[in-house]
Every structure is written in C-alpha cells, then in structure tokens.
Length: 91
Image (cartoon, rainbow, N blue to C red; front, side, top):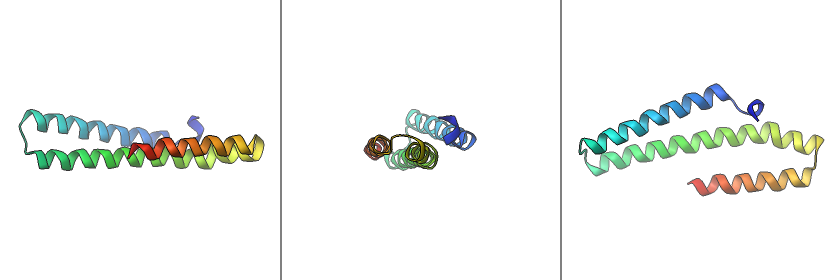
C-alpha cells in the first residue's frame, strides 16, 4: 500500500497534528479559555480530514485504478465505496 501514498507528505502532516494535539493538551493544563481550545481542536480535526483526503486520493489513483484495470472491477468499486463511507464518517 505504500506505493499509493505520498508517505513523506503524510508523515509531515501527522507530525504537525501531533504538535497541535500537544499544544491543545498544554492549553487545557494552562486553563486557556474554552473558545480558544475549541478553535485549536477544530484546526486539528481539519488537518486530520486533510490527511484522510490525501490517503483516499492516493488509494483512488493507484489501488482503485489498478484493481479496475487488472483485477475485479466490481469488487474494487465496492471496496472503494466502503472506504469512502469510512472516511466520511470521520467528520
């Protein structure tokens, strides 16, 4: 599966999200106003959504394309539909 993902890009995004989560934890410890914490939670949530989108796009352009061209197109489409369903439940 690694060939369908831009691993360096995904890893960089994940490290930034980890930094955001650490900052949110620190904000909670420092009794920062709730509104400010919620803004940062939303930013981290948006960043996670973007990572999912990058993974999903890579999956579509590599795995799904390959499955349709060289495998069972119906099963590939069914599996991709499930992947989209899982991804959209994130939000």
